[in-house]
Image 1 (cartoon, rainbow, N blue to C red):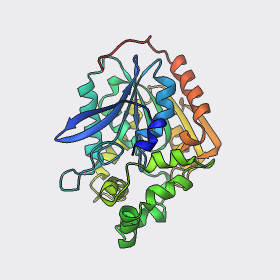
Image 2: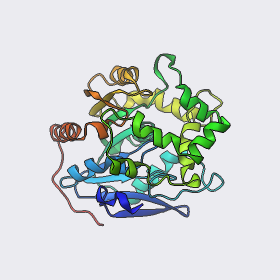
Image 3: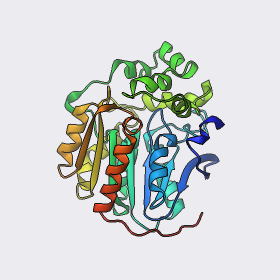
Length: 303
């Protein structure tokens, strides 16, 4: 997987998580920015933000278990559930012993994971930056797209397509972007998912989407949905790609309904991978947002 390193030249850090290696990037000094990816990406998705913001901020980008450079255990070793994702994040941030309030940067599944953490630790969260995600049930009884439903409901062909042929991650390289990705970026995004056993998280994330009260993660999603309003006083920046076949504009409208004071920017030529389509514009917006909401000068932290 060394071919992506020219685009992702960051030192790897690992925390032991019950015998599993939990990978994260920790670059720069100052106020902490914690970046939480979704499926089927990894911390590579945030590489441009890390590079641009680490001169002034402490940029922390995690890889969920089963993703990126973290260990990829089987389902007997690790329970691939939303609850565990939130617990893992909480364990890491406790381990890092952050002395300042943090800014959450969330995308895709990162939204639900990050906001579940924020509800529990609202005293630790200074700001939230949201990109094409949800932290609530689908708005207006919106249905799960057929492609995701087939994978979620363990259609035998869909399982083979995801685990055997990597079609979920591979198709996202084309469906999730409007402007297209370079060969190196495509390679970097899918590099960790290079064999059947390394794609388990890609499948389990989809299977963990709760559609009814009987689903394992339903109660936690309901808790986040019902308590999201408690974060309404935290400054929020929303950057949204308008061409997202899952998190479409109805999801953006729901964020705006719940957070009417949020600063919102939409991108007419961007898809689900909004940070890939419009990195420069989003970096400028984030820098300005961090400035106007006030940040402390750079402080050193222990490596």
